[in-house]
Amino acid sequence: MTAAAWLHRHVGARLALLLAAPLTWLIAVYLAPLGLLFLTAFWQTDSFTGLVQRRLTTANFVDVFTEPAYLTALARTVGVALVVTLACIVIGLPMALFMAKVAAPRWQPVLLALVLTPLWASYLVKVYAWRTILGATGGLGLGAVVLVLTYLWLPYMVLPLYTGLTSMRASLLDAAADLGAPPGRVVRTVVLPLLAPSVIAGSIFTFSLSLGDYITVQLVGGTSQMLGNVVYANFSTDLPFAAAVATLPVLVMIGYLLAARRSGALEQL
Image 1 (cartoon, helix red, strand yellow):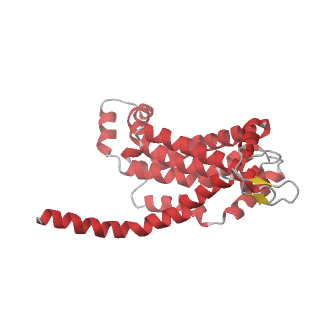
Image 2 (cartoon, one colour):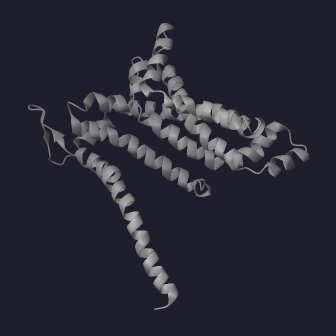
């Protein structure tokens, strides 16, 4: 056996052992529950006893895709997630640009810490605080949901944008300025194309977190309902139907990830 073959065999075996534990954890904690969720969606609930019967049926999905109320909730949920993601990009890009390219180097860690500080507070405390503020002015509704979710998930957009900007070579911006490009054009033609992977990375966080949220809608959404609320309302009374509804955000997110992958931006991260 050659030295190269021996090295390949033994290093490969050790690498397999090192990866075994994370892969086992991934299957046990993520993939297995997700598979069980899909399986439960094909079960049914006895209308008399309320007990789950493990008999396969597509009735739950038929109800989900034929009932206008659930389709409306799906459209509303996706729409809110997209608006929140867009708002996080619009607000987060100037913040990250200032932190990475304008602020003095000694202030950059301080500004980054200030952006991340809200994440240290309890999720419920922040939502209840917004409910108190918005409830006093009668501002509950979908607009309040977008506002609160944008506040909650903005750091998840700022962080990848800041990382992308700090890794961007200053010579590119200097070259564009030397050629006479105004600041707005520099941002459009140089900064944004190079930041596309960071924007997509941040959008995956903000979109997925908004897609699965139900507490914020419950507290500040007024009479508005999203898919998370439908799952929460049916979880204790009709688990298979709740599981069928819960597959919708999963399918939407899979489609979103596939679209992001096809863009090629994820390969540049």
